[in-house]
Every structure is written in structure tokens, then in C-alpha cells.
Image 1 (cartoon, helix red, strand yellow):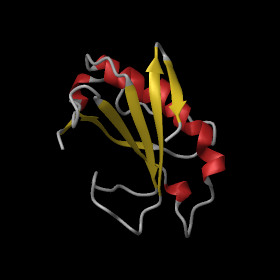
Image 2 (cartoon, one colour):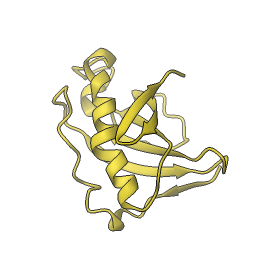
Image 3 (tube, one colour):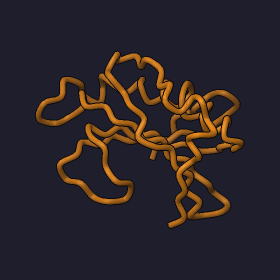
Image 4 (cartoon, one colour):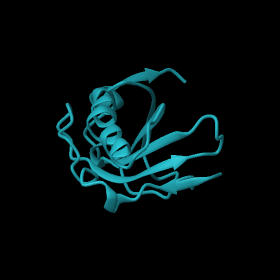
Length: 127
């Protein structure tokens, strides 16, 4: 699997995560470029949102569903473009804690949504 982390120093927007509709605290973990298939490059925007934790969290998927679009359009897309890329697809993930990409973590709560990019709009892709 060919993954690379975007050069965060090149993007002044990286740490500037917008307020999301749920009003939950969100921190950016990383934004990765997944070039497993050179004809279908996917960017993965990974965020930490402690409020979705199974045991101690206060928010469900329904509570944060709109947050995915906001994070895609108002954060991931500008950061990726700011680093000189033109993304066609972005996967936004929320986790209750920092996790290593691709490493299973049964303790972590993780939610994912995939989007196709059309201009400045992230369009939800049904898996």
C-alpha cells in the first residue's frame, strides 16, 4: 500500500479545523494520500473526536453525520488543494482517539464516510 502524509508545513490551514455542526471538539490527526491504485488516488482525512467514544462519549453517528461534510469541504479539501493536489475522492474518518492508520484497534470507535469531489463540494459516496 502506497501511503504518504501530506507535508503539513506546506499548508497553513492544517491545524485550522472548523467548528462542526455537532459543536464537538475535533483535532486533525493526519491527511494521507493513498496511491494504492495510481488511477484512483484517494485522500484520507483523519480526525480525533473524543465525544464519539463508545463508553464515555455523548454523540452518536446521527449526531455527527453532518460533521463529515463540513470537515471534507471546509478543512480537508482546502488543505489538500493548498498542497498542490486536485483530489477526486476523500475519505473522512473520525476516531475517539489517535490510532495508527491501517492497524486494527478494537478499543477505538471509528466512523468513516467517503466523498467524491465536484468543484468545492464533497458529495457523499454510498459504500
